[in-house]
Picture 1 (cartoon, one colour):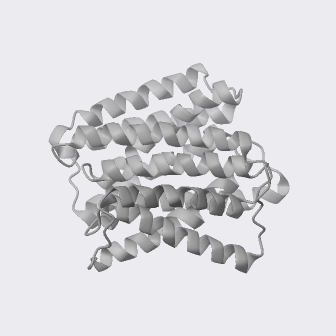
Picture 2: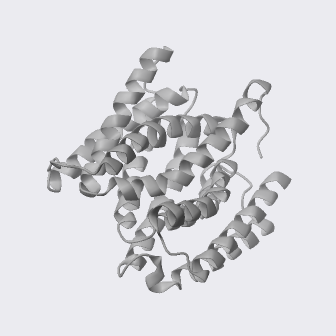
Length: 298
């Protein structure tokens, strides 16, 4: 893992744990937020909540919001990446169990490592890492073999689109690593959400553009949770970590999330957990662990 400055070392472990916990609960919250309103409304409502909360936090904390030429590339790269990632994730969430979203995102470190090797010149494709990648890909093949137990008739298409989200997210992470500069993490979060908000609004208007007359209370809570914690708090911590860790190390947060997300989906959403999903997830987690050990050895 990348060496930290003394001032950053104390806050990084806590931020790392907080992001891991948030990412473990986010897939289930996404699943719940779709009830009664659909994809486009749930995404747009989440971003509205997120932008309002981010603006309030900027005012309360006194963190500046740079509008310089140096800051805008980070906002644009992050905002478009966020739009593409979440649009794919929410579409796929209709057809697969919530926990599987986290399992598939467990492949992020491998995709990120490949992109970082080419874009950032990071030493990220060692034999040990390639072995971990092969093990994780084998685990993904086992998960795909679960068939109808994944969530529904279109589960295969759902998983494929979530895989596309992983690629978009990894590209956004590496791109942000290149252009984020010294912009404060909370300001980056606000800028990214501000850029993505009109894109989500346009997607909603091009859909049905309808405001649901009645939403289940669980859905309302899920949207607010995603807007505040899943977006503002989670992204601010994420970009804070991005400044102090390598792209590969940051993506390793996904080691902790898949199995916990599967368990939460099973306990709170009655999602089936056949042996194929458990074994495939275990293989992915083992591959991620090998990747982490290789990262620490660099």
